[in-house]
Amino acid sequence: MSALVIANTQIRRDADGRYCLNDLHQASGSEARHKPGNWLMLAKTKDLIAEVETQQGVLEFQQAPVAMVNDGFGNGTYAVKELVYAYAMWISAAFHLHVIRAYDALVAQPRQDLAPPLSAQPQHRADQLVSAGRIFSAALRTARQLRMPPGRAMQAAFACAHRHTGIDWAEELDAALPEPVAPAGDPLEDRVVEYLAGVDSFAMPTLIEALGLGDPGNVSLMKRIGPIARRHGWAPRRHATRDGTFYTVWRPLAAGFRKST
Image (cartoon, rainbow, N blue to C red; front, side):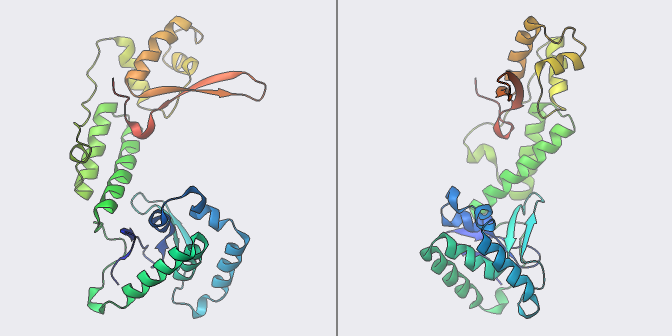
C-alpha cells in the first residue's frame, strides 16, 4: 500500500501497519487542544481501545491497538485504523471525512503500488525536513554525551542529518553552518567548556566546586564564568522554591543553537 497523505502530510506507519497520530495532528492544523495525548486521556477513548483489544481476533491488526515509538526517526504515537477514524472524528467532522476519503483512495490504488511502511527516505519535502530535524537533535545529544566540543558537535550533527536525509541545513536556512568555537586562550574558559560538554544543566556553585576553583559562592568568579557559558550557548533559568527562595540553573539554548552576537 502506498503512503497515506492528508493535507500534504505523509502519515507514517510502523512495522505493524499502525498510523502515526502525531502526523494526523499535524495534518489537521496542529492545534494544541487536538494533541493525541489529550484524546488518549478521554474515558471514551480508553473504552474504545479496550473494545478493540477485546475484538482483536476479528480485526485486520493482530497487535496492540496503540503503541508509542521513540527511536529517533519514527517517534510518535501509532494507532490502528479504527482509532485513527475515531481520533479524526474527535478533531472535527470535516477532518474525519477527509481522512476517510484519503484512506479509501489509498486502498483503491493498484496493488503493484505496494511500498514498505516507514521508508528510510520520506517522499515529501516536509517529511524530509522533519526527519532531518529529528536526526540532527538525536545526533547532537549523542555528540554532547561523547563530550565533543560544541562547535564540532553541531557540525557532526548537521553532517549526520545530511547523510541520512539529503537535507542541507545551510541551504534550507540560507545561513552558514556554525564553525567550531576557537580556543580563547583562557585556561578558565577551556576548563569551563570541557565541563559543559558533559552536562545537560549546571548551577554555578556546582561547576566551581567540580572544577576545584575555590569557594563555590565566589561572586567574582561567577561573573567570569557567566559570559563564558553564554558564548557557548547556555542561558540561566531562575526557579522558585516552595519557601519563596530562588535558585538559578543554566541550560543550553533551544536545539543547541548559540544565540547570535
